[in-house]
Length: 365
Image (tube, rainbow, N blue to C red; front, top):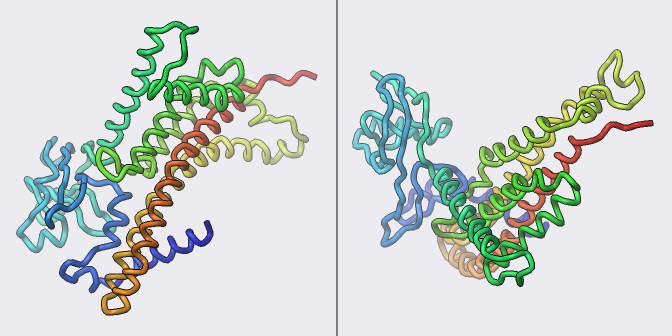
């Protein structure tokens, strides 16, 4: 794994430091754009290139401007702009609106007001990440409803289902018996719906992100906004349902008095711990899934990096590294499938543990 990490760091470094001249060559490949274009959100979904032409799924853009009101446009209207002066400020226009192209504000929708480009104040566009969220949610509902339909038609003592329905049942029982019940005990049925939703949503989202073609390929759990929302849900459940003993241990724990008064050292540490738990959930899921995508893409980019160097050396290195890159990419994709399950399991298990910790009972002497 250390050698694999070193290869990834080398590939990423080369992607970022590749000379700009190599990107401007006819038929050249913008490796930096490939790397960050996959993991970042956008107003369109670039699928692939066919015959030298990009195959793009254009998405609706809904936003509100304080100068001109509410607008519903399509990302295809932002593709071309003949005015060179405006091109330097944005990437294409529609009804006076532009997708900002500057590095510090790239991807923002701005409106031309007089001689200035002003950002819109409210943007609820259906971006690639939002579309992937809807697709994964629909797949999740269909998977669970198929298993629920079987349960509705059969009795408890009937033989276990087979096929896809049996797989769903196996996962449900595994999550409940191995992750939720050991932590929550008698309270497991109360919080099982939320925790199972977390597991199956994260697992399906991770698996769909591994697929290299639509409706897969979206990096939803590699988007910190998504993981922050999931962690926030756990944070609210933990602290809203926490017992009096839980809050007492935070602000007035069973520790020596000099640790609580006059300097509230332990209460400060315990109160700070309330926020570090959801932050750990958020960062762990986000960083692991983002790193998996970046490593897989970087290993593939090694081929293009070598051939872009040009000359005999570049062709030789490119030919030698092609099978190596393909092998490592396949290995990383298979490893990612395992990571998809592990990260869903870890998030669910830690959420169950945090909920259990907030339901501590009073200690009696």
